[in-house]
Length: 215
Length: 247
Ligand code: HEM
Ligand code: FES
Image (cartoon, rainbow over all chains, first blue to last red):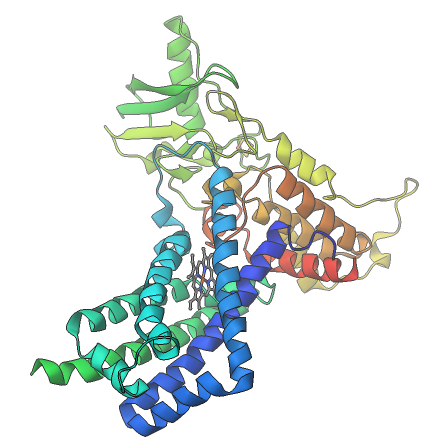
C-alpha cells in the first residue's frame, strides 16, 4: 500500500469514505432532530444519551475527525486541481457538459462549513460548555428556531447541503470503484431520494417552530 | 458566411501570446472547421502574414491529432465529433468564433493552437501496452473471450488520444484517458498479466505529470468525440485499489 494515500486516487478515496461517513451521520442526526416535533422529553433523553454514552462520546471525536479530514483533503485537492490549469480559457461553456454543483463542490463545502460554525456555536458549544440558564436542550433548540433569521440561516444551510449532496452520493461510489453504466443511474436516483429526505426533513423542523410564531 | 474569428496566437513555448481578430468572408457551409482555417491561412500567406499553426493529420476523426477549444467547447459545439469532422453548418453567419488551444499544465502550448501532448505518450509508455514475445502469431481462436467482454474492451479502446477529456475537465484530469486504457487491457486475457503493475505505474505517471484529480463531473464523457464512458474511471479506481491492496 506504499504511496497509496499520496496518490490522486488515494486522496479521492479518502474524500469518498469520509463523505459517506458524513452521509450516514446526517441520517442519525435527522432521526434525533425529528423527535423535536413529537416529544420534548424524547428529544431531551436522546440528546442526553448522545452526550453521555461512552461509545457515542468516542464517536464525537471520530465525527470531528471525519469533518476535519474531509475539509483538509478537499482543500488540498482543490488547490492541486487549480494548479493543473495555470492559464484559464478565455471563453468557456462548462454548463453544456456538467452540473453547476459538480463544478462548485468546494464553494458549496465552504458555505456548509460556515453554517457548521454557526450551528456548533448555537447548540453544541452552549450545551457542552456554555450557560444553559436552566433551559433543557429542547428549550434551547426550539427557542432558537422561533427567531426568524436563525430559522432562515438553517434553511439556507440545508439548501447548500442539498446542492453538495446532489453531486455527492453517486460520486462517492464512483470514486471507490463501485459503479458502472447501469449503477450510475440507480445511484443518482438513490442519491436524490436521500437528498430530499435529509434536506426536507431538516428544514421542516425550524419551520414547525417558526410558523406558529408568525401568526 | 461572414465570420469574425478570435484566435489565440503565440510565437513559441516561452512567448506570452494573445488573441488576434480576423474577419473572414465567403466561408462556405460545406467546409469543415479545419478547411475554414486552411482558407484563412491561404489568405494570411497572400498578405505576407504568419499562418495560424494548428495540428491535424487524418482529417477523418480517427488519428486524434486535431483538437481545438471552439467557443468554450472541446472540438466545438457538436456531439461526438472531432474538430476535423466539425462542419461549418454548426455556426451562424456573422457570428464570432473564439478558438483557443487546449489549456492544461501537462499540455503546454508550442505555437498558436498547437499543444505538446508528449505527456500522453509518457502515460502509454508507463504501462499502456502488453508485453508479447516475438515469433509466429498464435492461433487467434485458441483464446476464447466473451462477446460482452470484447465489446466493453472495444468501447474503451476506441480512444484516439486527442486530449479533449483533459482539455474540458475543470481539473485538467487525465482519468478518462488512463481509465480507458487500463480498462481495455485489464478486460482482455493478453492484458491481464500486467494489470496490477499497469494500474500502479500509469497512475503514478499521471500524478507526476501534473494532471489534476478527478472530481467525477462527467464533463470528459460528455465531450469525448468517441463517447467513452466514465464507467471506465470507476473501473480504473477499482483496478488501482485492488492493485494497491496486493502491492
Ligand atoms: C455534512 C457535510 C458533508 C457531507 C455529507 C459531504 C459529503 C461529500 C461526499 C459524499 C463527497 C463525494 C466524495 C467523492 O466524490 O468521492 C463530497 C465531496 C466533496 N466535499 Fe463534502 N461533504 C460535507 C461537507 C463538506 C465540507 C464542510 C467541505 C469543505 C470544504 C466539503 C468539500 C467537499 C469537496 C471539495 C468535495 C469534492 C472533492 C472531490 O471530488 O475530490 N464537504 N462531500
Ligand atoms: S485530424 Fe485525425 S482526428 Fe482530426
